[in-house]
Length: 219
Figure 1 (tube, rainbow, N blue to C red):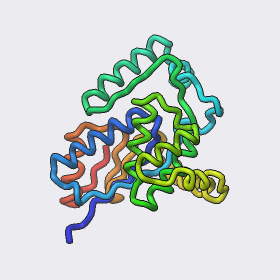
Figure 2 (figure 1 turned 180 degrees about the horizontal axis):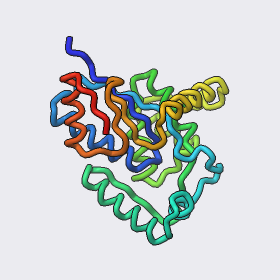
Figure 3 (figure 1 turned 60 degrees about the vertical axis):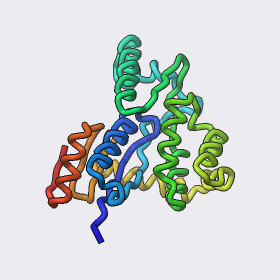
Figure 4 (figure 1 turned 90 degrees about the horizontal axis):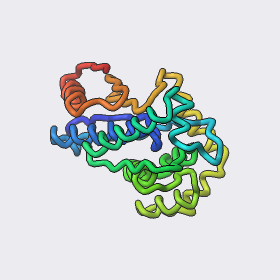
C-alpha cells in the first residue's frame, strides 16, 4: 500500500488566506493526481480569541489590528476578492460585515472529524462566512450548516456547553502556539515540511513532490 501523505492545516474559518491556500493546495493535489493519497486534518487557531460577542465591523477591525487606514482596508478587501476569484472562491465583503470569534466553530469541526466530515464542514463554513453573509458565531447558523453536511445539528451543539471539550480544543490551539505558529494558514506535511501562508500552486506541488523523495522543505 502506498504511504499516505498527512497534511495538518492550522487555520480559522474567518481567515481569507486560509481558504485561498487550501484551494491552491487542492489544485496542486489534483494536478499531481494524488487525491487518494492525501489525508488532511484541520487544527484550531482563533484569529480573534478576545473578540467580543457582538463582533467587530471588518474594516474598522482591520484598521485597528493592522494599522491600516479605512481606505487601505477597503482596498485590501477588494484585492482579496480578486485573488479569491482566481481560485474559484467568492468573497462577498459587504458594509457592516463583522469579524467574529470562532471557538464554537473549532469545537464543531472536532465533532465533525469523528464522522469523517471535518473538511466538508470546514469548506461549508468558509462559504457561509465569506460568500453567504452568515454569522458563524451564531449557534443556530452553525446548527443549519452542520445539517447541510449531513450531521445532527442540535446534537452537535450540546458539545459546545461541555467545559471539558472546550478546554481540550483550547489545549490543542495552545499546542500550536507553543510550536511557533503565529499566523495562518500553516500547513505541516508528514511532520517533515512546514508551509506558512497561502503558497502558490507550484510551491505546493514542489513540496508534495519533495515528500515523495523524503526531502524536507520549509517555506
